[in-house]
Length: 324
Image 1 (cartoon, one colour):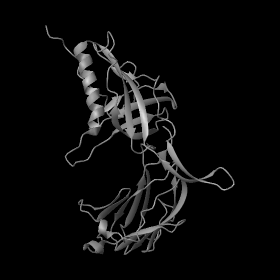
Image 2 (image 1 turned 45 degrees about the vertical axis):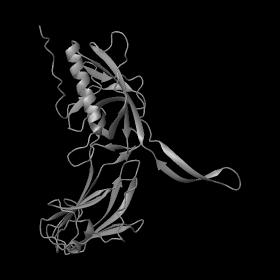
Image 3 (image 1 turned 180 degrees about the vertical axis):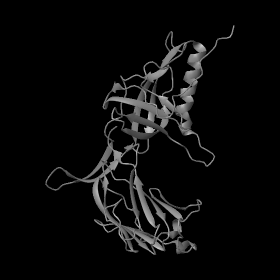
Image 4 (image 1 turned 120 degrees about the horizontal axis):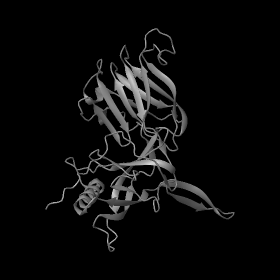
């Protein structure tokens, strides 16, 4: 008689598994999000798979390599600090009501992790995401790639209705990022209350002189979205003087018309018109400096030429943190 197995079903998007105590971070709810967007709860002790807290590591501060120079009076002086990729060790227990149910769970989880190494139709690999949620509703995430460890214990009684694996996950960016972005909006304003609904100015040249706060522990490279009308846009970081200018005429388009949008990513550098076409040539190379925002407050200026009603600039970034 064939055995009836229970299909592997992940919880609905947004559902948070229970919190458990984990090394380096305390009580938290953990979810793994595979490259397809499927959410796998990692801390629900009533589920058919869950994290074995003993043995978890790699959730603390990012690793660094320090470069120093000998000092003539003895010792050395720190010259350079380089963040290194992070490795997370993640032990998991997998079980099932019977052998076929266990095997289905084991295979499904193996695929969820290892598919981070497969290239998609565009030739790129999509990482998984490890998400750490706190009781206050905040969450931090880190992108991960499977490295090794999806192997059973190989001991008597394992591999029938339960087994465990110690997975190693590799993170090319060692920093955790806030699940929610910080967003700043500046729009051309006609005569209006300066403070309502957000700071506005009526000049057709200077759209916004503002202080942007990065609440994280590390530099971030923001994404900018420009909405026309505009003939040129210059973004300046006041403390360093770094700046870059978007000039639509450089790519043969002419001025941005009302409602037309261009998105500028600063890391990696990318400029896309609203139809997806490549506008990297619209930046003022080689002088362009796609600057970052350091932790804390930074004074910035968005300067538009040809701005009228509807002209706007939107800035967004995900703060980056040392720990989960």
